[in-house]
Length: 367
Image (tube, rainbow, N blue to C red):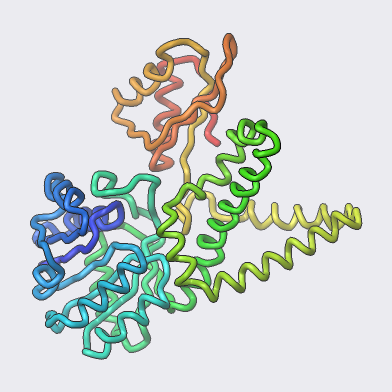
């Protein structure tokens, strides 16, 4: 593909999309725009974009592809601004927001003027942000949902897929409503539950300080998504409000059901409740990326002596294995603690386990 690609928002998602497009289409010219001047400068310095502009008009009017990788509210505002510009007639406009019905509705002015808008949602991410966190392979094997309206020609959808072929993502075409229902169930609502669990633990920790200490293990892991950007999740909840209200009511009924089972000491039905959940959960794909980014953690039993962490990270650095996070679950004098190292991919985690095994006698667990 040749032409000009205009990327609005050069954080983790926008930067990674730009890198994927450059990799697949080296003849394309990639121009960036970001309200954060430092982020824009970094994207230019890293070679993620060829050039930058200081206004939407300067970058959009002669673009062949416009990609918006900004939060939902900003996406809606950007679409309103684009609707007042004279764009190329054959331009394709897409976004990367986590909700789609609101965004597609906001694009109606552009659509009514004859422009092609195809909603998009690449289901990949990281706890890091900014242009410096962008990765060429961020979307590889991840699902990338496209939400065109019915009137959009198949040829235009295929053109967008071709532009985005460097992501190596799995493209799925669904309606905006279907997208919002699906992501509500498997992404948006779980973030509410995780945050609710954390808030409950916080409340009980006022009564007993052991709560926060004991929550440092598995509880911290299952609620990790509660550390996501509060502003982003506020907007997602408001824009997917109707879907989430239904899910909340369904959840309350489910909790009332299990509450009644416990109150009645119904051993058989309680067992069935957990069994049904286990069977469905165990049948979920284990080697695919889903709506919530997976965490690839390696647990390493380490002795409590000075320099042990730098020793292990040094071995990983020697072999070019990048880590995304590192923490110690627990360390006590004269016994082993647990070092938890997080990686971007399963491949990196396996390489790291092999690296530690070759250089040390520390036990590793791929959990």
